Image (cartoon, rainbow, N blue to C red; front, side):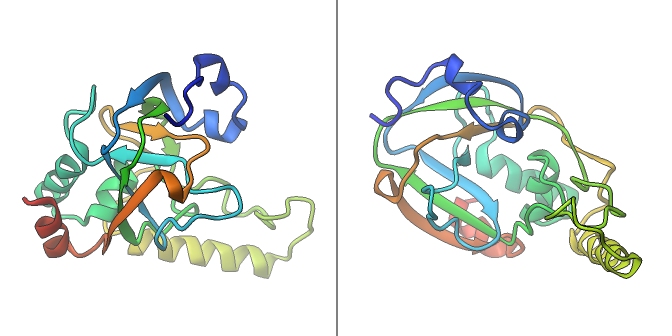
Length: 205
């Protein structure tokens, strides 16, 4: 089992930014062979600290009655892409991630995870006119700030839906899986989050 001793107290050892991703949270056990997905730029490749811990269930799981298929159905009903639907429901700020791809994996081991609902987020994580997002101590020029404003406005236009000031719809559920490595998952499909036909085929809808 992965994270066999994980408990609620461990949640408060996470970075504040990770804690703030949840509105409510508890520890649950996810069975081996559970299919997970995320929308992300690239393919959620493993990095220095392992695989990204943020995932959602492909099939309905516990309180999540929809899974990836439900998100796809919602996207179709609203005439938007899967990428746009997940951005809204999963509260992903425009400047965090382009959400280009649907990435699917399967857990190879039973796993203890933090399980909870998304915390609503603003459409931009920081004020557009801040001089330098990566280095708040650096004095930036008005030209730099204007360039960032233009970039974020372009991302908003490309989002594929009318982006509200606050992201987050009815309850949507997510997992945070500490210590996740490639050894713990079997990688599957990586599909464009804008290719609704390919996603429909992959999810059998």
